[in-house]
Amino acid sequence: MSTDLVVPVTVAVITGYAFYKKTDIFSVFIQGAGKGLSSAFSILPALCFLMTAIGMLRQSGIIEMLTGFIRPFAEATGFPPEVLPLALLRPFSGSGALGYYEELCANLETGSFAEKVASVLMGGSETTFYTVAVYYGAIGIKKGRNTVPAALFADISAAVLSVFAVNLFLQK
Amino acid sequence: MSVFFFCSVIISIVFGVINGKTAEVSAAALRESAHAVELSLKLLGSLCFWSGIMEVAQKSGFTAFVEKIFRPVLAVVFPKIKNKSKAFGAISMNVAANLLGLGNAATPLGIEAMKELHKISGFSSAATKEMVCFVVMNTASLQILPTTVAALRLEHGAERPMEILPAVWFVSVCSLVLGITAAKIGFGKGEEQ
Image 1: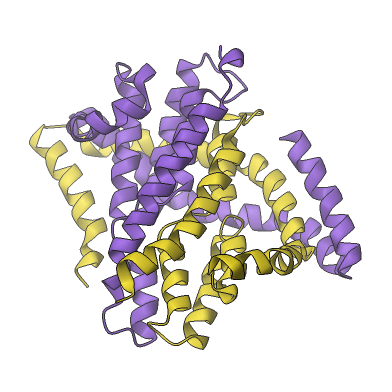
Image 2: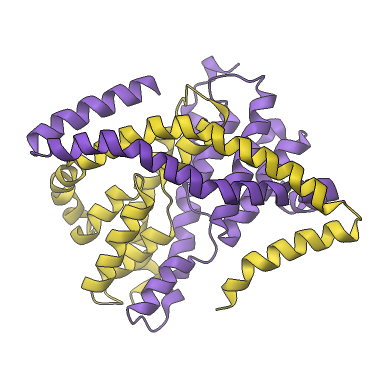
């Protein structure tokens, strides 16, 4: 697939431009990479803290209970119930959501309404808590203010909108 | 953050007992820190590499070029820092990487942007409005081509795996706009420094 070329071409364009501008690519790269190394270490403590909290939440079965609780509302709004765990898992765990999505792909008929909603949801959202943990962890932010509510609001909107979008664009 | 941690632990214990999953919860408490190490090790290489590439882009003036492309849109989201070129440049590079679907590159570039925003805030321990907007922006998906999803759909027999594109774009853009609006409105004008 041609998308395989995105990474190498990006690297080539940036280094090519630097070469053209006569930048000392190697020593500048080493300098920047050194900064990256210290970033990686500064993330770790915050990541330990947050991933433990999120991991415990995920294992406590609260997501399954929420699924059961929200199911009637979801059915009333036309949200496919099979996709509900995916929508709830998505902000917490990237690999967990991907695993669940793969399972859905295998079990649902490709091109069915539920499969399309799941695909749109996967393509149109991100692992919220991981992003928050890494970005705030890197610079030692203690008070995230309204970040998590705002991000979760965006996640909920994405879930609701994916049903709407599939109806609008993909059902003919 | 401290409140979040405490509440998570209490909720996990309560629901773990209700659902009979105390063993899993306890295992998670012991195991997840090891996962955090795994994750930062995975990040280590790409952080080094992309931070290096970012430095090259910055020193050569490539960032300034990318910045120009995104300035019209990003100046609306980050009006306060549109004249702080280093932060603005790093944000532009992060957005560019996200659009191209370079998740591995977007994270280091985003951390770079966060560091610049942190400098501007005078190294405050509380998030600024710009940081909230930027993080929320990164929790929404900006990817133009959702390649992972398309690959899985193809594998499971979809005739046109990319047919979902218009719907994905629609969802991404709408949730992004809603998220940033929520970030801005919910920030609370009184506590701004």
